[in-house]
Amino acid sequence: MSEATSPSTASTATDSRALPFGKAAALALLCSLFYWGAFPTDPAHDKGGLLAFIAYVPFFFAIRGQTPKRAAQLGLLSGTVMNVGGFYWLLDMLKTFSGFPTALCALFVLIVATYQGGRMALTGWLIRRAELRGYGFQLAATLAFIASEVAFPVLFPWYFGATVHTMPAFLQVADLGGPVLVSLAVFAANLAIYQMLLLRFDPAARIRGVAYAAVPFALSALYGIFQIRRVDAIAAKADRAVVGIVQGNLALIQKREDPAEGLRRHFRISEDLRRKGAEFLVWSESSVTMPIEESLSKRFLRDRVGRNLKIPAVFGGVLYRRDKDRERWFNTAVSTTKEGEIVSRYDKHFLLAFGEYLPFGDDFPILYQWSPNSGRFSKGDNLEPLTLTVGGVERKLSTLICYEDVLPGFTNDAVLTAKDPDILVNITNDAWFGNTSEPWEHFALAKFRAIEHHRYLVRSTNSGVSGVVDPLGRVISLGGMYRAEGLLSEVRFLKGSTLFETIGFWPWYAASLASFVIAFRHLRKRVVAPSKAG
Image (cartoon, rainbow, N blue to C red; front, side, top):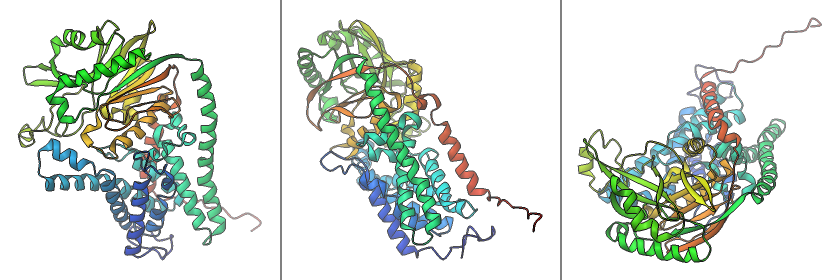
C-alpha cells in the first residue's frame, strides 16, 4: 500500500515498504545498542560518540512503512533495552538506599527503563502519524525527535547530544539552543546517512533529503570553529584565579560513620593546595557530613571548618531544623571568607529519589516506614548565588548541587537569578552509584552548562569525576575515580549572556507542539488552477 492511504485506514494499514516485525525488531534493537554504545563512559572505553552518527539509522529502517502503533511498539522495544543498558547502575543504588530485596529493585529498574523507553516509542509514533498525514519524513522525524528530547518527562534527564561531548566543534551551538540543538545536529547526520542509503530507490528525492539533513550539520561545525576562536579571545583577557578542588574519596557509609576522618582528609589536601598557590577552594557535596542544627551552623562551620582553611572556600554540609510538623533536613552549600566566616548559603532544590526523598513520601508517610534507608530532605527555596571574595574582588558563583548540573532549564534560572555570575560551581557525590559509567555520564552532561553560559565550570565530587571545564566545553583539569586527591587549575571570571540564556527552551516547546499538530492534522495539498491557455 502506498503512502496515499485514505484517512480512514491510515492509522491501521501497513504499506509495502514495511519489514516483517521480526526483522524490524532486530533493527530496533541494533539502534538501542548503537545509542547505548555511543554514550559516555570512562576515557579508557569511550568511543568518542562515533556511533551516535548512525545510531538512529536502523530505527528509521525499522519503522519505515509501519503503522503508527507498530512504530511505537518498535520504539518502546528499542528504548527499553537502551535504558536497561544505560541505567544499569540504578540497581545497586536502589539495593543500598531503598532497603528492598534485589528482585524488587530489579523490577523497579525495568519499570523505569520501560517508562523512559517511551521516548523512542513517542518518536516512532509521531513520525509515522505525520507521514501518513502527508508530511515529509525529514520534517516529521525532526519535529518528533525534538518532542522526544523536550516534551517527554524522564526521571533521569539526558540528551542525545552528550554523545559528542569530546568534540568541541559540535558543542558550541549549545549557546544558541542548549543541548537540544547539539542533539539535533547529530540527529541530522543520522537523517543524511539514512537518505543516502535510500538513494537507489528515488535518487532525485533522496538527494534533497541528504541536503536537508547535511546542511544544518555542516553549519553546526562551522559555527563551532568560529565560536572557539571568539570565546578563547574573550577568555584570554578576563580576570583569572587559581582554584583548588578537593576530592576526599570517602565511601558512602564511611562519610556518615566517620565524619572526623573526612574532615582530616579534606584539611590535609586543602593545605597542600593552598601551599601550591590555590586562591580559593571547592569541596564536594556534603563534605562536612555531620548533621548540624541550622541555628548553630554559622558558628560551627566557622570554628570547625572555615578558620582551618585560611583562604576562601565553598563546601557542602547537612543542616537541619525542627519545625512544628517535623524535622527538616537540607543538602547545603556554603561559602566562607579567608577568615572562615560563612557569607552565603544555598540549599539543593532537585533532590535524588530514594537517596534524599521518597516519591509521594510526604503524602503517604508510611512509605518511609517501608523504605527505612531513604532520606527525607527538603528542597531549598531560593536560587541566590554564593559569594566569594577572591583577590579582593567579590565574585558571584551560581552553585549547583549533585545532578542539578544536568538540568539546563534549572541552571538557566540560577544564572538569571544571579544576574551575571562570574563562574559556575558544582559539588557532587556520585559514590551512590559505585564504579560504574554513571559518574562519567554525569560529567559529560554537566559540561554543556559551561557552553550554554560561557562560564568556567568548577566541579568537585567526593569520589570522581572532579574537574574544570572551560566555556567551550573543553576539560582543562580532570581527576580520577576513587582516589583522594587535589586538583589545581586556573579559571577565568567571565561576564555576558548567550542567546540560549535569553530564550531558553521556548523554540523547542513550539517545535514539540508542532510535532503533535502535524500528527493529527492532514496536510492540505495546494491545488493549482488550470491556465486560460488550457
